[in-house]
Image (cartoon, rainbow, N blue to C red):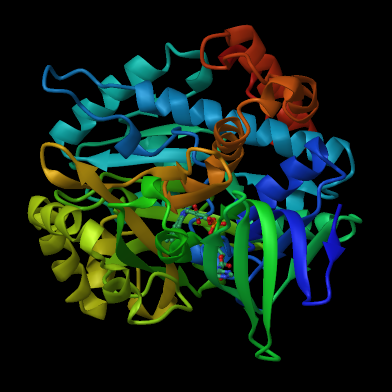
Length: 504
Ligand SMILES: Cc1cc2nc3c(=O)[nH]c(=O)nc-3n(C[C@H](O)[C@H](O)[C@H](O)COP(=O)(O)OP(=O)(O)OC[C@H]3O[C@@H](n4cnc5c(N)ncnc54)[C@H](O)[C@@H]3O)c2cc1C
């Protein structure tokens, strides 16, 4: 299907921009559904998964709402709303199902390279927070996706679960914790690399590293002309594609603006950078075995919820605390300080200003975070690890997130913390904006993207989808037996912790 003409203009069925987890997931899906389609991926850096998808740039939490309190808000009537938590838990089960199928097919070789069981815990202190966590637990334990969750307010029990968090803590402090042993730590960087290793060997697939997409233009026949620059040779190339996915992470907004599609008008981006404290003392690292999520500070963005994370990166155990938020005008960690100012256009200036005015608490929070001294950061860590010593922790820069700002009829513009798929009406181009819950839900995001961009063809792809995701078309949120069996099978193939019998 691919052909070249004398002007070295190449034609492709699909071009994917960016080599992170999103393009890797879409690439595998397209390859499984349409193996004859020609696909080319362009990545501006000289390696794959070096931005947000890299293990050290994100928290590696397999987000399944087992511990993240921002997915279960307390409502005005005092009840705890778990709708979002169910939705995220279901999406992560779909991701595991997809990865398990890839392992069964031999596309992914060794699951422990990218996913491991690590208990997911929530931990709070103070009467109001303890009450909230108790109510959250009472509500969640009734749903099959959260069966097996344990709860305690007993210092002794919690100390057995997380000795590092309880050591040196005042015995009189009211504390509470929940624990789910089936939580996971995911190395999305390793997963992305494994997926591209497979794709690179497929006959109709090309991965071009150190190739930056500079421009996009819709041709009269509805296809896309893509201008790419090889950053090693400085040579330019032109590709004509029937379908384009802008999976450029923080770099997606500027490319969406260049595509000039009307569906992309009015979107803006607000960058939030992140930092971790990384433990350097092996004895301290060995004492902790969980991802412990706390409650976010008032006014802080949901992704800044503090957490103390056991990570397993390249087979080695690590311990991180954070993230501390920061402000940078860059849209990518390897981006330019001009990214934010260059993204401001006539069509998005109003939503951006309105979102800024509506989020003064967030602005104050970011200013406070940026002004933090090393001692302030250790103080924040000591709320979770009372015995923490400054010399055991080093500051690391995490990945860059670009939160979506979009038009709003009432407020003029709103700041969103989720992801947003923006596609042209004819489905020939689609961009992924935003970052949360992100990589964990990449499989569900890409299914929705395919349904949106290929509405006619997708009807005939049911069997192919079912081969990739056996529960496709059914609801794991509503069907308890299906969810339990799906989870059991995925855990078996991915070599993960199974739920203990009496908790099912
Ligand atoms: C601090 C932090 C913590 C996070 N924690 C979690 C977590 O615990 N769990 C979770 O599920 N998710 C988490 N996320 C979100 C997750 O990391 C992202 O959702 C996911 O990695 C996004 O993948 P992507 O492929 O869209 O983007 P990326 O991995 O950023 O890939 C985009 C690629 O596009 C390339 N690119 C950009 N512009 C161009 C161009 N013009 N031409 C060619 N290439 C280009 C970039 O170089 C990059 O390699 C976190 C993110 C951050 C920043």
